[in-house]
Length: 305
Image 1: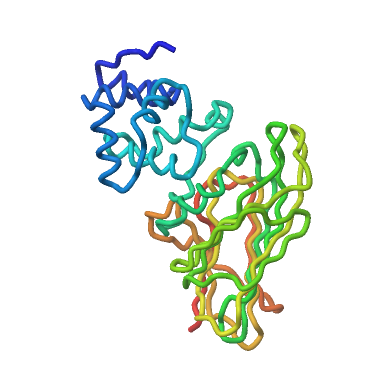
Image 2 (image 1 turned 180 degrees about the vertical axis):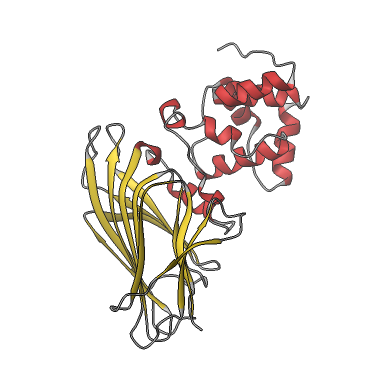
């Protein structure tokens, strides 16, 4: 493939937008006036080992970065070359996925810095080819105001044939890891956890590859030991608009909150905002449901006194 010469910043912006990856990488290196050896050395200074031949293959389109360590190198290249975040990573996704609509990176929704690495270790193949039709989260608290259970029921629809998995990500408010997990209608594949931050990324495998337009129902959950610290907020970040979301928090009868609020923030860098008061039911639970909601973080917080 002939690689075009980029002479202006506007041309670089265009090639970063439309790709392909190898052309954009070559153009960015050329625009910054760096040699491949200089790029290799700067990666090495960040503790990332990539050979000259690998860099050459990437910019010539002979191979593509796919493994977790290679994707880490691509993120570092974006910094070294002074490019917008995710500009090169986005070009590694198939064109059909890039045109599927707004899609927030997982690190834009979760403030913990390790979330990207956990997801990359599993890989996001086919994630954008699933439309979330319905998702129900239930959080169950214990008598000491601690989180005891997280239960999720979801229905997806395949945009393209061949999708056979989904990645679930959960972050405990106080950095605790679950003591057990359950799955129905699917099974756990690769699971990656970060004990320092309470992050878990889990691959949920369907019983078959879906046909285009086919729907799939699954359930999964995480359990936590009693005696954890009190929690005051829970919710979920959506990387793309969602058709339907129902969230419920169920409290122990001996530990009921004083007030409950619906919350929202568009990304992890924006302060959480209360958008509505919520009423606790006589059965000790609070919930809200929304249809056609925007990407971002949607949740419920409560005050104990």
